[in-house]
Image (cartoon, rainbow, N blue to C red):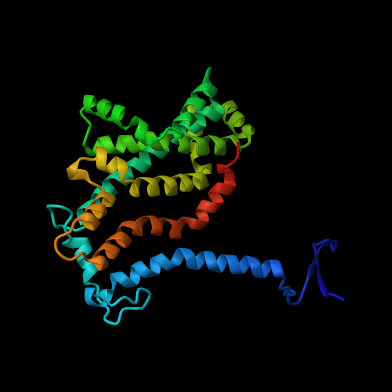
Length: 307
């Protein structure tokens, strides 16, 4: 017989029955298959990262020996220093550092502006619906499925006429525009999942559009905001196409600088420097996911896929 313990309330009534003792370990064929699949999948995705790390820590003579998966015999951080500070990205030899700061200047305002506008859009489309709001939302969602390449040339002409082509504000505006459909969808679905009574009670108390938004909706939207920050940060940081076309040479992001380092050949191709530069370029999105991974799951569960 299984031992149990009974919890009681202050009145002595039985509240719940909980089992005690060790949980029986059941190893089934299906569980073995699941764990085997997860282990194989983890190895499959981690193996390239391992190769990149160990290659970036080796000297070029050791790389030429092969031994792709071996830990470096002579550990060196010189490729990392060169990738950051002195690697050539075409005619300039300043490494990835200028591109890193350009990416920061593009990503921070791009994320903040796009999330603010998307949150207002989702809030308005959920609680302040106007005539034709569903048509407007449908057109906005249609924009999410239009390939970027189709609209690049018209957008170049448009930005040129505004005097924003190849400028920092121009690339920020482009990222804001293309991040708007999916972010608006996330916020609209999240706000639609909230009890409408909250909105009605605030209206009865005399709160207006902005008071309800900033005092009620924004504090409640923290989980979905974290999801939006993760998506938009990784999307802008990892972008190559828009950075190449719209940023202009002084504002080239880190991904463009990485491409220039990898494709620039002056004598020997330095694979260790290339690997170090690749890891440096991917460090920020990786850090965002590692730090905010659990919040991402919570945000999705809190309403990102409801509606």
